[in-house]
Amino acid sequence: APLRIIMGNPPYSIGQKTGNDNAQNQSYPKLDAKIASTYAKQSLAVNSKSLYDAYIKAFRWSTDRLDKTGGIICFVTNSGWIDKPSMDGFRKSIETEFSSIYVFNLRGAIRGRSGITVKKEGQNVFDIMTGVAITLLVKNPNVITKKAKIFYHDIGDFLNRKEKVAKLLDLKSFKNDKIKLKELEPNEE
Image (cartoon, rainbow, N blue to C red; front, side, top):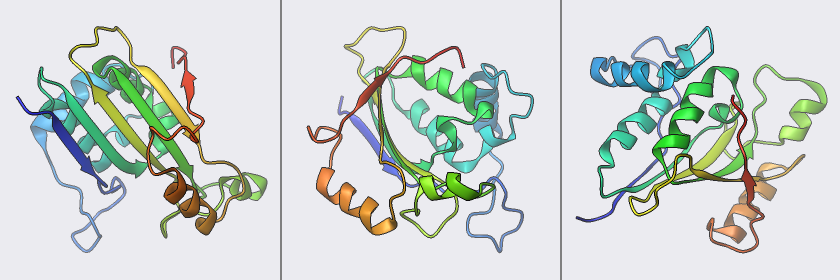
């Protein structure tokens, strides 16, 4: 069977209320039930609303499309899943559902932040206030492991949009030796 590759930039729409918004929230009962039985079930967070954001739904839908032959998911999304406490169940799930995880954190999250924290985040690569990450999930059926190997790269502090885009154009790929990928050992959260 051919290797499945799913790529995209899913909408980040949890706060949208009407059809006049860019990407109105849709109801997907089967998908929501799958999120409840995976991401939400493993979460210790009291409020799991963010697990039903459209970009998280895209991860769940895509993961469910990778059958026993494996495959790859690559998304440009909100980076909130990386460190928000409410996303602990999502992180725990992908760690067991994939053999390798690659994350390029482009940062740029300025909503709800101020002072030096905002300056360190740098400008966003898009005209948004939400941080951005490129995530590559690999499900290799020939690799038997309880937990994925996780590789992480942070673009750096205090960078403007032009500097971030220049870095992306220079690096081009997770396989580029110039990317200093750090292998992470996750804690319980």
